[in-house]
Amino acid sequence: MPELNTSSLPDLIFSILFFFMIVVTMREVELKVKFTIPAGTELEKLEKKSAVSYIYVGPPTQQYRGSMGTGTRIQLNDRFAEPAEVMDFIAEERTHMYDQTEQVVSLKVDQHTQMGIVTDIKQVLRKSWALKINYSATKRAD
Amino acid sequence: MAKGKRKVPGINASSTADISFILLIFFLVTTSMDSDKGLARRLPPPPENEQQDAEIDVKERNVLKVRVNAAGNLMVGGDFIEIGQLCDKAKEFIKNENNSPNLPEKHNKNIPLLGNCVVTDKHVISVQTDRGTSYDVYFQVQNELVRAYNELRDELSLAKFGRVYSMLDDEHQAAIREYYPQKISEAEPKNYGGDQQ
Image (cartoon, rainbow over the protein chains, first blue to last red):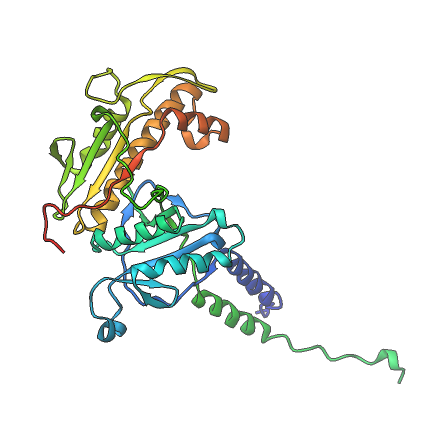
């Protein structure tokens, strides 16, 4: 039986590699809160990833339960924060944004969160003029 | 032996496949494939001065109050409804087909590409939640309201331009948006029907 010619195998794998490098985005931060985002039908895609800031809300993961408890927490970048700190976070995010008017805040909030904390965040976002928000969700077949 | 005739030994390239495999796996692990999707909303700008922004005078018939309590019960206008009915309720309210006196008032408006229309652009849907309402319920309410608008816009653009809203160009979309402007107001949360925090 003739041997299989594998000389083009590296090229093949390289093209898959490049495909992946273009299609995917780097994972932004290490998640310290656990959340399951709700499912909806009328979703829009988030364009312009560079102009998106993420706010995560949910109970801390197992690892941080000891120090942070099991209540709902906010995560900004790599740390836990209070609602009032969102303002500084938004201002800081803006400084390294190419087009500041396009800024979108993506809220990744756990389904079981109470609205109180979400409203607090929204009020702070209003005060910092970050008015475009996006309630992150998964697609639900209807 | 002539110099030019010497054979250069080929580099053994059999391991490049392995190397690129390792790179590939590295990228697969460190990146996330999930395309970010969500419900896009716009918050109202902050109140001009610190004092409570004066309740803008809107006639009662122009407001559809959607209240959600801590237990996740939904109240629209005066009656309790299920989440599945909200979309139709909202559509009926926004459209006001029969010009009924307790649904939003209609008046004439000249919209480019659509001409003279009778629209209900003074309507407001006000969503009021309790601090204890779960985010999921709130999200579903928002989802249903956006769905009501999307369906109305699709209906209109199908009737006028023969295509669904998302297939229209910017100019036509703007016209449709002017006919059915999205007006969902989010009132400050209140504490009612639930445990106080």
